[in-house]
Image 1 (tube, rainbow, N blue to C red):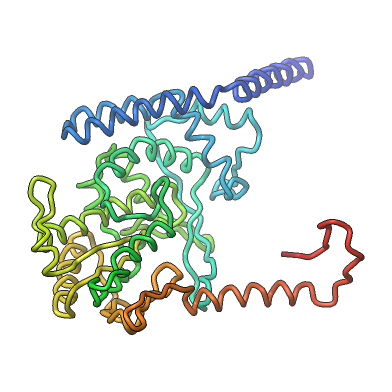
Image 2 (tube, helix red, strand yellow):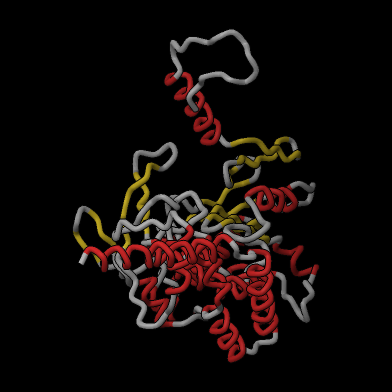
Length: 387
């Protein structure tokens, strides 16, 4: 009996050693190159409207050995790599990562419930719900995100900057600056606020409109969550904390810019009717679920608000009447932590009051933690300050 156990233990050690060697010897540049090649083909098929080909290429990508390796690497490298889901599992060693990549499959795939936690919102007493999928579910989401990203990028609104590669809040703010900095720029701004965006998106709309394996998508959406040892169903929304959630949210909101262009820019053969555009001065900029729309008059801004309301209704979303404001540029408005306002015809851009308050609060907390600490004589940069 002991001899048998000893042999089994030796076999396991040998197998783990081989798996460790396999993982450590992966050529990641080659993996990325091969996956990127498939993504480029998907992008080309989307542009040509060949959706049958898109489906075939997505299947090839999600069953690709190299795509599975990349899908496992992503959740084991980000900030939440040590945070386990409901199964308590973390992939911290090369052998566990390699095992996971080899068993990653959509065959009979059933997503496990999400672990729900609450995190504090900056400057607010209300906490934001966050969910933590298991490592296996994170890897599956990462795998299907690789197949979905080329579609999302190809059909995305041009002035959408959130959760997209090589785009940032700075790009969004620069776009807003371009809209408002000139003497004859629009003077009315619709500040859009979608009520509980991530938690309210219609599952049925996603299933009907998102180009991916419907069985797997349903598992991502309908997994449910566990809070205080109770299982709750998920009837709507994309869970904040899931890798694929930002892409699904972007796909849901993409199209707002198109409906505004159709009505106020009269685009024909890819060209804007400049006379028509100058008449309304409607411009759009979005970062995730925060957006602004400029307009020449208050009446046009109100009309735009109703158009967007109608667009969102089909997706199970609605604008917050309290937080969706129509503001004159002379009064100023906040967007992505910055305040935009015109004074004597000149556009001023500075950090918003909320951003300044948050910064000073952080500085105060650092001072409070280090209050009374002994500062040694200067010796390089080795100060024992706790940040």
